[in-house]
Image (cartoon, rainbow, N blue to C red):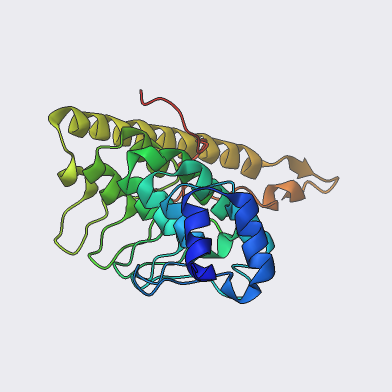
Length: 265
């Protein structure tokens, strides 16, 4: 007779959601069901690895991630596996269902954002991670080698990922532990030219935004001069009203640019 734990793993791999539901209802202790022979991957890891989005909601509803984020022996979460494999639908469900795993890092120090940047097939997940309402990904994180998500996107030749990350404020001048910037990892001359133009474009937008905001601040600060009957001059109290913050350059986001997925220009 096939053990229930083996039957559950097979049902997940073969995409049989009804059987999965019956098994975890009958054998509730087997919900996570880590496999000692496969890096201790849990049921949710298997869904992410084998691209089974129909089963993910069943496992989450049964409490698979309640209380603790699942990790395998590589310290990878199910979200990590989905991002690495380019399984966008699974990754989207995991971002929504267990957002606490967005900032978790694997044994190499890479989070979900870095792993998405490494795989061009996962580019569509980047805005979901960066714009999450409660657990937004940080575009400035570094792995154990000092690489940022922008380093990984450049090395992968993912031009769309470069645009998304830079528009989110990623620093194109950040250096890793080998003292290399993301530009140094461009795969081709064309990719290097695109990267340089992209940086120049967003820097121009940032500078124009800073200049425009400075002009608005000066206009507000001028106020209205008031002269009373005795000839004493004063300034309209509106001159002291708070104004918007000044542009802070790379690391605070590029002004006036929304994070979106679009064709590389």
